[in-house]
Length: 160
Image 1 (cartoon, rainbow, N blue to C red):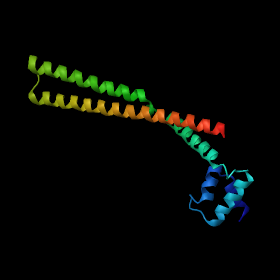
Image 2 (cartoon, rainbow, N blue to C red):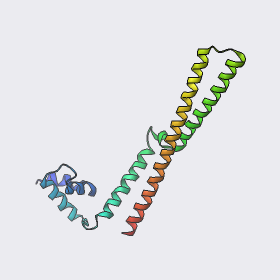
Image 3 (cartoon, rainbow, N blue to C red):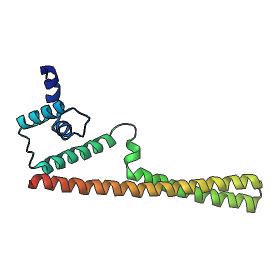
Image 4 (tube, rainbow, N blue to C red):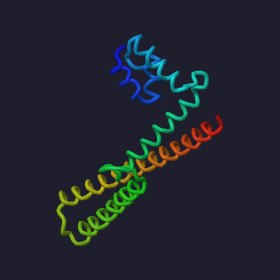
């Protein structure tokens, strides 16, 4: 193999080389042999692979957290924003129902179509609030599971 190709492989991470070596990447026999050679040069412990897998999983989780806290979609990953949207949906539902009922029944200032439209809008806000609440609970559960997984992986890496 050419030195250029070998240099290309040397720039790969340990995880990438291991995936090539194991055949997870579509790679030829020669690529797998070269990946094994480079891993051996880096004193890769083929007998204690769990330590590496834990480290790779921890890096993946850390990368996810960093990506979630950057960019335009930061709002979506904060569970409190889901909760505020849910509370807003519920409050909007109550305000529209109460004010529309008063206007329609007491003041007779709304037509029946306007009243039905406002009821439909309030139901939409209620459903929106329920969906946001469900998303909020799921997001909190995801964050908690990730924290537990990070703690477990960290202790496994330290103990090995």
